Length: 452
Image (tube, rainbow, N blue to C red):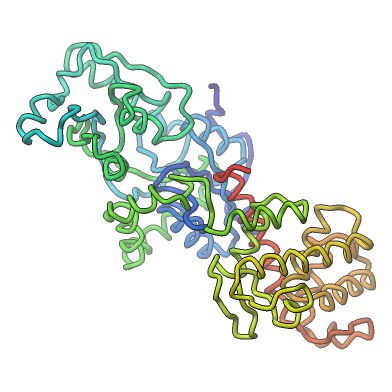
């Protein structure tokens, strides 16, 4: 594909902080970013959250695959930071500005062990595998286009004095897809970063990843070349975080714990190995059908309420998967909130009631959803108060963002919660504002990884 080799927008740190969020471009793999038991995880993801906190902005994730595509999204302003495990190459420095390196790595050949490898000795296995890159002459090696792996194979062909048959796999959408194809016997060889290769080798024991094909290389993130303040802040943050124990905890979690990685990759509740979010997906899907919702939206709400823990209880006495108060639960037919079926049934009943209430007041379904979610979290009275305040102060009572949500946050200010139009009084209502945002942001993440 053709990509923008230079920035077409002018967005630096000041503009990012003014709008309140940074958009990070991430790869879809078992190290950088994935969903596990309903929770976003990954080396890049965890560090990006820390960076966003340091910059005092929200984090928005955009998943993409392929370096050229990612550079294009970055330079056209659809992302602000390219948070791939990106190898620094001379060619790429013409298109992006690299951050300080995260770590050093090297490339390895990914190949299958012999069919009966479990019954063979180490020496016999090694005799049947490529251990010297010279043996790659005349062999087909598959890579994703425009990657450092393709460049390395071209240079290696020059170094060993013979042609490696480089095959560009344009059908693969993920960085790990070719590793999987080698394991399944669909292609003979590929090249990968040794750390990602080792993680995948724990999942596919028939893979060998012990033949280096490069020297040490630096891995970093990237920003647009006309975002110097953002790059400066990222580098300052990286210098600080790498001196703290937190960095090594995150690094070890994804690069040094192959057994944990294996558990995640094999789990039905991981976007890496399955298409499930929880043991209660069928109940959630049934409830979502009654609501007319995408089931992943309801799942996001359930995760927000209970993290899919059916016997959780809040400080206020709300219980169960959907964290209902006993009075509300009884009203909608639940007598045992520790029972997932009863909890979801009652929670769905309450959401249907809220939908009916707001349907008579907020016509737009996308806006109405935000009112429903906020009411589920904080109750109808506080949201109704915020609508009245919005209307009184010349804002739109039927629009959530920067209108009703703004006045909801003002309900901790005496100048507002003592207003005669306010019936429910004081509320520290940042929580329902964040609740709406968190549920919808997580829903967007679920849609990326989990099929409808």
